[in-house]
Amino acid sequence: MPFPVRPLCALFLLAGSAARAADMPPSLQPLAAKVLPAVVSIAAMAPAGDNSNQDDGDNAPDNGDGGDNSGGDNSGADSSLHATADTPDNTSGTVVPPPKTIESLGSGFVFDPDGYILTNAHVVNNANAVIVTFPDGTVYTASIAGRDKAADLAVLKIDAGHKLPYVKFGDSATVHVGDWVMAVGNPFGLPGSSSAGIVSALHRDIGDTDLDDFIQTDAAINKGNSGGPLFNMQGQVIGVDSAIYAPSGASDGVGFAIPAAMAAPVAEELAHEGSMTRGWLGLATEEVTPQVQAALHLPGTSGALIGSVSPGGPSDGALQAGDVVTVLGGVDVANPRELQIRTAEIPAGQSVSVKYWRDGSAQKTKITIDVPPAALDDTVTPPTPGPVALQGLGLSVAAKPADNGVSVLAAKGAAGKAGIVPGDVIEQVNGQTVASADDLQAKLKALAGQTPVFLISGNTADGTNPGPRWVAVEAKN
Image (cartoon, one colour):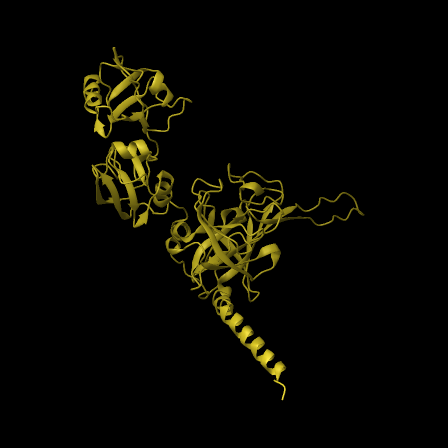
């Protein structure tokens, strides 16, 4: 009797189908149903050609830098802009046509049930009317409660007369490359659109703002998604969709979202204070080079090396030049830019823990973040000195001490190549404070052939003054 081949093949096919189904990721339907009611579409109207309120530097990057500038006013990284005008009736006399308007379409989400909605600042740039539409078709006129240009975020307020569905922020510091995410928004005017993907990269700087720290995702993000939420699988907002890299003019799988660590505190401040007052540590910092690592006995080159501490500032008495900040508020700091961003995420007045290296050992302290002063006087005025030559370094310094170290009169050879210029002031060498030219000579002699690393304040070779900096000088024998 022949073997029943077909039923067996069918069994194999069914088994293969079941195995493939088991390998598929779970349905995102429960997640979408949970979060969609809190995601809104935004239409912002502004007079065409009215640039009276245009902020300098608020234009989005071009397609090569992470944004799309479609539309007439360059107001957003991926805003969809349309010019509209009524057609005048010229059959009876002179008729003045109504003014043209620019309509910017974007997205947003309710983060507070009392009617507060977060979106991108560029979505509502110059707007004199903002309309918010919920997924059920309910329409509200919104006011702008606050706008933060530095982070490209804005908060809208609507008066619904009842509590609104809302979503909560998650912890973007726990996000990893490869995590599943879902974006929801209003791409091309199609409200309630969802797309899924993964986190492609973290801490992207695309040159959009001074605080760029984007989450990169391959979830489809298009024009009109600006201001929409990027969700983790728990339905928490871990990013605000803000920009795309789109050589083709549409999503090419490279989208960028402002992390929740930045968006959440800004949203709260804008909602309740109308503006964001960022914190200030009172530190001038720079990268840790291998030479500095060796000179200061550091375990690695990660962290932000302190060049100076502002007198009377929040870090005065807690940190000092030569310390290397590695953790701020429980978040690792790999370099000075990350310290700047982490500080910007903390509202003024909060007390945070700081971990740092000093004298070869790990230490920690607490600092209360303060409001930055209106202006800082970092002018260096060197005294009139007599020359003291430092053989092998190409340096000539003043015999009379400056207020904060030793003034450089001439820098040639190794010192000149390292970027030291006349007018600089040497404050430290290999982590030790320099009081005078004689003191500097003694400390250099004690290094016994080691590469000296100077803490320098003053102008760089291009004439700019970035603040104190650490410079390694390879001595000539």
